[in-house]
Length: 416
Ligand SMILES: Cc1cc2nc3c(=O)[nH]c(=O)nc-3n(C[C@H](O)[C@H](O)[C@H](O)COP(=O)(O)OP(=O)(O)OC[C@H]3O[C@@H](n4cnc5c(N)ncnc54)[C@H](O)[C@@H]3O)c2cc1C
Image 1 (cartoon, protein in one colour):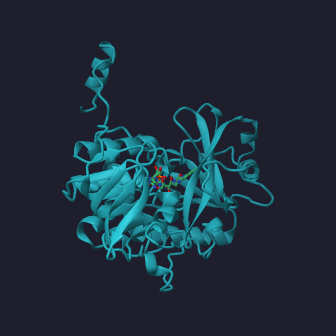
Image 2: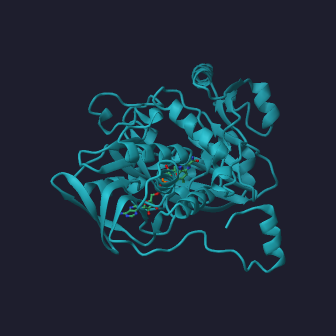
Image 3: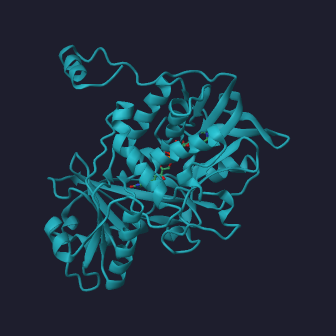
């Protein structure tokens, strides 16, 4: 079933009786060539590209809950490629290019909206750093513009420009960045993968990995044993727990990240704004709610809800940047499980176990990476070689002293 304008009108006139479920609900088969653990953005995109680009068959995605119920459906929907380091920038720009054609390719409205992201700077030093970052982006084929205070004021006159502690001195704008409807992304990839023959198996938790003579043989699940030639792990905040089943300890900590949405307001923010003097960012959803967030809760946890001190911290950031926000009411908040790596960059790599592959360490930035994360992981699973844009995302980079420390903040998860 394809989506198009004619179909929508026809269904509207005929009582919406023709719509079909977007994917099958198959029982697990005894064995697959490739099993992907985790039905989030990374896992679904991997299965999609494995089947459509790399022409692999006999693939299953095993999800312990429902498809898209993890971070892919909990994030604040920002997509961008404003990275600076050589290990990161080509990968995120590759992702940006995939976003630009995603909806046509999957025939699914994922509401990709290139409304721009503006990173505000509040000191001369920060402006210099943004200039450097913008130049690095342009050199690797992305877009970037450095704005002065007047240009920012024209875009967003209601910001607190003359704050004594954090005056706004300009901003780095990436116009091609923006937002995408997060669960629509999961659904688009899920439907595409299902159409290409992938079995998407929900309510199927992986509880063990069967390894013989150093090679993966299959997975134990709540729906029985499933044999597998290769297993790809894409479980984000649960990475340490799943890899522990193979006896591996990861350079990753799990933390909660919260997000918030206000009551619906008239259109006032048409892009994404980030505060440069604290951890706060905001955009406006198509329904009118202001969607915003800040720092992780700062303690290790597997709970998908956070605590009040971070709510207060985020509210302080909001008030410092945009005092008018104090008059809006908070509608709801939620949390997700972050797989915080020690340098803030991801891991897409083989493991010491033959046939076991890892996609993890996305911290709070894996949504924007969804297309490239899936494509690069599929490339690795299908060819055994890292994708050219993901060669730096090695698991052993910490041991080798080659971290990709984009923020220059060291091995401190709460700062990435
Ligand atoms: C509040 C919040 C805001 C964020 N904002 C942004 C943003 O604006 N931009 C951005 O780029 N990123 C953002 N992120 C980060 C981004 O959402 C994540 O990095 C990314 O979604 C992680 O990859 P994923 O989609 O594959 O993870 P998930 O969707 O979490 O997928 C992992 C899946 O694995 C499943 N699983 C776990 N264990 C097992 C098991 N044993 N067996 C079977 N299945 C299992 C889980 O149920 C889950 O569905 C945000 C995250 C949060 C929580």
